[in-house]
Length: 113
Length: 112
Image 1 (cartoon, chains in turn cyan, purple):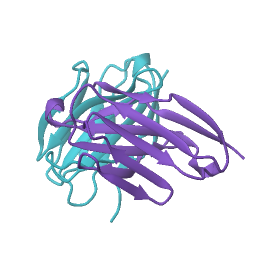
Image 2 (cartoon, chains in turn brown, green; image 1 turned 120 degrees about the vertical axis):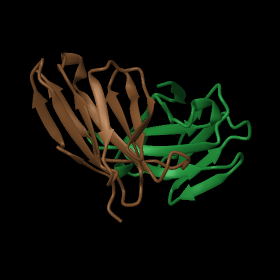
Image 3 (cartoon, one colour; image 1 turned 90 degrees about the vertical axis):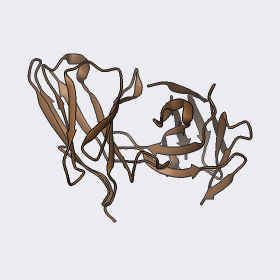
Image 4 (cartoon, helix red, strand yellow; image 1 turned 135 degrees about the vertical axis):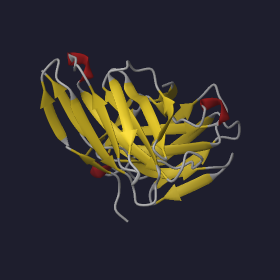
């Protein structure tokens, strides 16, 4: 069974631009979570989607948004990029929000110049 | 999200030595997961624990779910160079609103 996939793997943007990241969960998994990872802050939870609905949201500004499609694929959007948004963005999937085991994708490395 | 206390923060060991690391929480968890992350890659799930007192092995890796349900331990025996990386714990419980809390990570360096 294929794992979680994320595209693109690397992205360079400039301040003020917006970006969209994509995540395809493991086949059959309907819950997708997004995390931001930086050396100083570690793994920070952004939000979780299940059945096209946002279930939980972390403490991030409204510039960070997401959505999930009927095939469980998810996208994350960051508008008006800031230098501090440079990070590794990780997507993780589990079969449903009640499931205890979560699998990560390889991540998208975003650099904001 | 909330971070769990993970120690040690970093380790430098000789190839062949055993390694131990642990995570502690102020909350009771129902699940503990251990991940390994290589630079620039996503965390890879190593071991999942679902029951207090549970001891689970995956090759040279052994993890335990603490009896108090507030801690977990990971041991690596006979370390090899490819064990290099950052190890994370993750916990899940009713108090976390069904969201995972993550440890701060242990950076492991194995000297050949």
